Length: 382
Ligand SMILES: [Zn+2]
Image 1: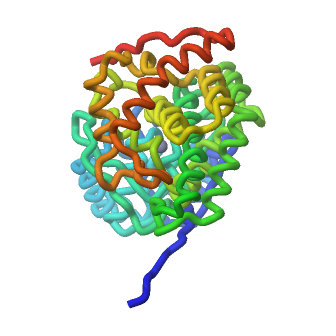
Image 2 (image 1 turned 30 degrees about the vertical axis):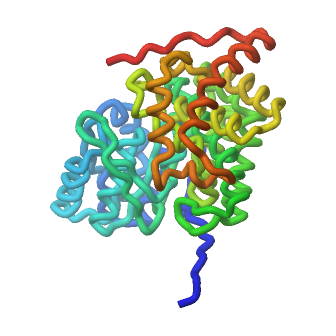
């Protein structure tokens, strides 16, 4: 048999973003089915119910909603599948955070019906993707589930994003900044992406566009969230965090930054940090490992400090003396099959541990040179 090399672009069927678009959820779901099941926890439901109900009435769709616990566990997914079958639902929509959305993706896939992501914050690039992360009741990672297709609909209301906690948007920016740094490494090696044997130029280009938009708009977008307003800068960053970063990571590929993030489960000091906060340490570590120009590393530290993202060991609860934990992170980040091996050179645990260690000194020096506050030690809450 001759070799097959697939270049794949994966994307949701429809992406809808904007002010008050939650009111249009009904009309978008109507084209996917007639008996939707909405999944949202009580806090989210309280916020969206009224504006959503109007649109459902106009579209002549019944409003059927079930609550959701804390984590996307296998049991939570199976219970949703049962609810779907008992109620004869033909489309399911997850409204809220990452866990709700992941459980809904997995349930929709198992039930063989259409599924929609309705994130209420721009805190990661997961909503557009064709994968879900399954956890235990205690919030420990169990497995990735990959689906043969992306969501049928992703709908994100920027008024909800503007009213969500600032830290959520900060995390989304951290997740999205990594996308270009990782995709350009994968573009060099033509290594595997999340969906294909090699990246598409489209995936790589969208990752770069996400990066450009963030550098121009992230700080202004954070001001918008602090004053609970929707500005063009916020709209731009929501699109970069959610759509561009989502397409960019899936079809452009991941490399060291996310692998180092994954490795941090090995260090309890880092627990409680958001996905994007941990990813940002991974991005800086990758830049150091690959020998990026010192001006680029300097810009990255200055910019991510202004955004409010950690770029030092202290800010993830570690010191350069914690070599045992740093080594454990580095070992976990370099296990076989991790995306860190998409880098254009051989990556060993030593390389990762040394880059992480030097990040502390580097970050402190550059922050001091720019009159930025020195890193504060993060303390994990148990
Ligand atoms: Zn991510």
